[in-house]
Amino acid sequence: MKNMSNEQFEHEINIISNLKEVGAPNFFYTRLKARMEKENLSNELANPLKPILVICALTLFLFINSLLLKNDSNIVNTNSSQEMEAFAASYDQTISN
Image (tube, rainbow, N blue to C red; front, side, top):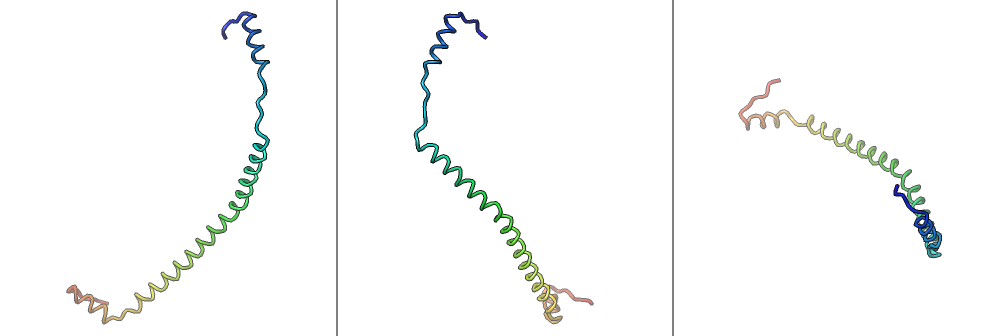
């Protein structure tokens, strides 16, 4: 630290002690408190619902996906052998069982 003389030190202490306290407007704290309560309330409501919605959406997605895959496998199995032979013949191929 810089060495100061007692006069300089006393002068700076007097300046600091003569400073006046600055206050906030009356409505500042009420608005701040209301904003903080609003954020807390919205966080409490939003967080528990998110995992539930994600789990439900994924379950629904898996259920629909399994139904579609089951229907696709039935379509492939229902093709007749004549259609398969016609398809193979169009590419000059033969089907052997």
